[in-house]
Length: 488
Image (cartoon, rainbow, N blue to C red):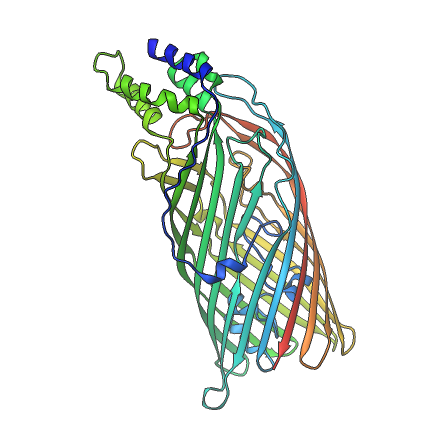
């Protein structure tokens, strides 16, 4: 096409420039999100388990029957009755993910994608938590109230510029902060029930490069346009949502307890901004695309005219929206006392990851097609075994092992979450510094099974993937937890 040849000549003459004008949507500011910087490596999917250094030392077993531990405010409100007076607890877990990718990619034109393997996409990330449990007295005796701030979900990866998978992901950040307000009732001396309301603030950033040259050359059948430099899109959005958690506990004595809890889905309808960065060469082409599409004499069908309008009026800053549904959690915990000093714990947890088949982003610009990343995740199970040993009045030792299933598969595994099955090995200790104050610590090693990804080319909307990515991930993580527990 003559116009395309002119565009190709413009490309050779134009130098690279960037446009970064932003049109932002306002979002409700919530204070709790400011204290959290989360990243998922110790748990599958984008789940985060770091709510207590005590529980961390047992490989996250006993979460629904824990004693004198404010993590139960969100994990199982019924277990809040297992406290000796008012308990205030603060913890921080630092997750350090080490991972690398080895692989390659190709374009829809059949050419190999240049670039490195992305470096280490993870970095140390702190996950703080804070909670308080207050048993009521007098006329309200038997009622226990609690509040906690936790980060149950989150993820973060960032790859080196120009890496081979840049058209799938360059940056991913998901931060979720929960404020949970719970109440528990001692129904009988052995049975308690509890319920909590969850307020969740979520913020997300998704970035990737756009293979403009491949899109132009393949779509317009003009190989000369393949030299067009890449663009980039970054979507930033936030949302608030409400949910609930409820559970029960049967604890006939200090040597046996069983607890169950259910956490609801939380539906997030994200709204935010989509910032497109494109080279000056591409911007110079866009008026020509529009003119061609609107030329009644051009030998083009309706689909070709629509494609030209997308190229001509798309890839500019606009609004973006998407829905994300956090999974349900069903947790069963058991505690068995052996003698006077040993307690054994076990957990089984089902996570309803099938609530996340994909992430579908709609844009405010009518000429910008929707974007979709398919996950096709499955529901998973987490199993853990742990133990506590009361060494003396001052020190308690902990240990545990766990297995966490991944919701991902080899076809849809994305560089945003290169997840797989993992085993966890934990050690922990508490030091009763004074009658009221204890220092809690834990160390967890996470062995992640090597994973592969085979993302095929699929140029059809809404996937609009003009490149493939094939390769293998390997990695591991360490989690260091530290906390203080104060009893009034």
